[in-house]
Image (cartoon, rainbow, N blue to C red; front, side):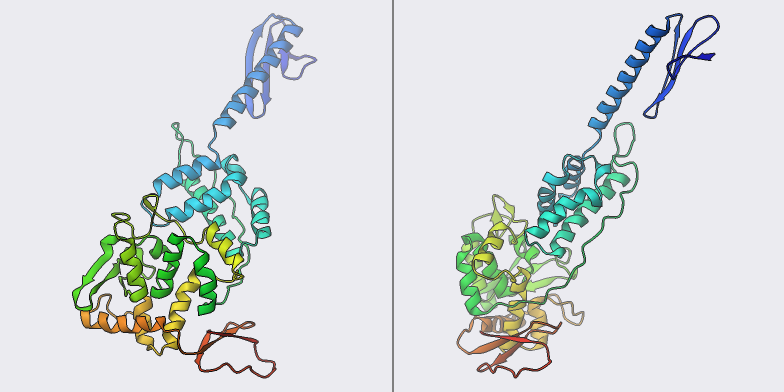
Length: 384
């Protein structure tokens, strides 16, 4: 065989041409016979065009991030967190949806991260989105396969860099702040917020509260909700005591849905921290208030009312293995009286918010006294 003027085309002593060339990792090998140099070059061009077309078709058929995310959501329908994951996927869609799964990495995530930071979103919330990306890509590499057995992602994804987080201190709200915030919320979200601030129930349990968990307690004239271990953070059953405000909300929700206490279009709300909450929070000048701060508010109001640490733990569902997950009706009645104490607005109270140190929030009965200037952490006093 002798080389010709075109790389990849050879000719033998009998004038038979052969194409033997690698193009973009694909081997092209064709025996042409006595065609002539020009015809051989035209055939080579045609073979290269065929390879290009096949590669483009193959690339177009490779799963995109949107395909991986859609499959993950379908397979996660049984999980309580699926609504939150779907919310993060919707945020990520405009940035990653059209990308092939193997093109999702720190560099391609930069526009998403930059836009979220510019919108004032915390590093913690951004990291939750990045964790969703990491989970979906890992599932695509380990579990998802084409019909021919090829993985949707050929290798494990690169490590996605998380943003450094600065934990925020609890921000229990005062009555005045509650009055500024809650009336601006929609009727549904306002009821959920009022329920949370009067029960201390976490956001996920408020959103996913089911009528099947309701247990009547005739001795106290109302019901409780028993959140099962699989739906509660500490993996133990938690009895939700309903004070007068929480009970009135539950009564108002009856008949709206056969399954969910706080339904939204026949389904539970995926999150209370939606755009409506964030907009109203900004309008009320309370950008520091998170949904979880409603739970902190309930706990702090219990402490301010003189409720014992043991009863606070029972009402909040703190993990205390010495406490039973269910209570006798006498216990429910006692805890109900304690929970109703948080409805008393009459006494003057002061909340001390530690601004420059990781301290607990303190509640004091009586008039506020402004501390003298010192090198100690700054305390912000707000009438409550």
